[in-house]
Amino acid sequence: MNPKIPLKTPLPLYKSAPTVEPIQNARQIYIETYGCQMNVSDSELMAGILTRSGHEVVSQLEDANVILLNTCAIRENAETKVINRLKHLSYLKRKQPDLIVGVCGCMAQHLRKKLIEAAPYVDLVMGPDAYRNLPMAINAVTSADPFLGLKLDKDEDYADIAPIRKDGVRAWLTIQRGCDKMCTFCIVPFVRGRERSIPLSVLVDDVKRLVDEGFKEVVLLGQTVNSYHGEKHDFGELLFAVSEVQGIKRVRFTSPHPSDATDSMIEAMATCDKVCKQIHLPLQSGSTKVLKAMRRTYTAEEYRELVWKMRDRIPNLIVSTDVIVGFCGETEADFMETYNLMAEVRYDSAFMFKYSSREGTLAYKSLEDDVSEVEKIQRLQAIIELQGRISYEINQELIGDTVEVLVEGESRKDVAKYQGKTDGFKTAVFPKADSEIGQFVCVKVNKATSHTLIGEIVA
Ligand code: 5AD
Image 1: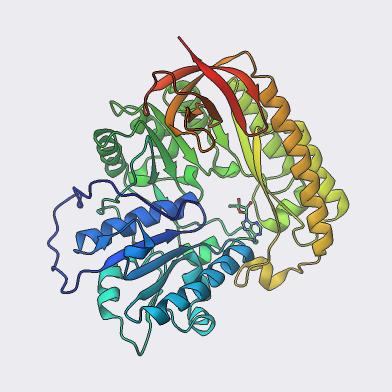
Image 2: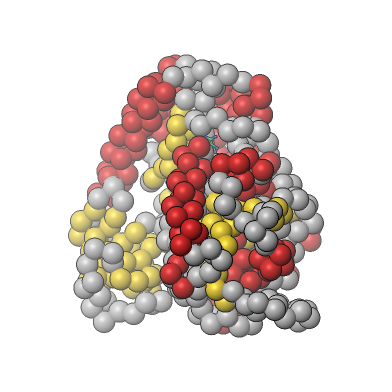
């Protein structure tokens, strides 16, 4: 994750025009983002809220007198990383006593007061539904007590606030907040609250604004994005509506839940040219027994059928997934079902994790974290190795093909090259030739690794 967010021109800051009390003491605020795209999107929202109140959001930590960490709670290592970062920031605070350090987001909501015990020098602890109060909280910080903003609010959707995004070709647009699914392993419902959808008309206007700001691609974001139901419209209708916005070239979304993959969604994907033929469809486990313990609400067979149904309807669909190994009660045989399902589906790519028990979740309360760490690591390594091989083979088959790529920016490894994404969200790297960022180019694939297509622009 890139914690440095270079900022776009911060206007307009409102979708409507509310009145705002000017703040007394404008601060320079640096926001550092951890975790998923939803957090990146929330940091953009925080930047919008802070800027409209008269604070300045800066892109260098050295220029800041307020540092806000926007954190993740999904696995233990996400929290450990932030605790270590806070230790480092405590040194800075000793040198710069007026420095305000705040912890925002999921870890703030998860650990609550415990965070203050672990890091007593933290001045602010603000959960995902409290960002409207950030400007006030920053003003209210005293040396005596930290400011806590931890109330979850099922009505808070921030629909009226214009986020400030970094320049680019792709914008992430939150269409839904919270989650109602209650998977037993997952902390999200407890730290992000109940599911709420942003009205469809607001989102369509947002996409028009994104086009005006120069974005070519929009990624619709939600915890279970396809359970969207804004103003009685379902997710398929939203895909159609957003695709109709003039000037938007690509629409994609993340992450859908298999149980909410309706025909309306599949039809929109199949028939809207602008909707990318790509889906990130979290599997979590290939064992129906484990899926049941996870409360995923589908069987392995139903998941398998869904993938084949989508592949039938959407030729060349790119499919990726999330998998957890070592969940409570997962036997070697259960794990092998996951392994075999991955081998059968042949995902283009996968995010793979070992189970990390999270205090507050249903599994933490009622299931035993009984797979040993050694076993978890072995299982994880086995699927990483399998997936690496499959991704490599799939990408090798693309050698000689020409793929359409949206040019995103300079390659990290070679300044003479650009990189961008295909419709299927694969990264392509190629010599710049005369192309420009934001342009669609045809790239002939000459080489491929498991992660990247390497080629050259052809006419
Ligand atoms: N342990 C390990 N992985 C988890 N995920 C969510 N909760 C946990 C957990 N407790 C994974 C899931 C999810 C992804 C975002 O993170 O695979 O889809």
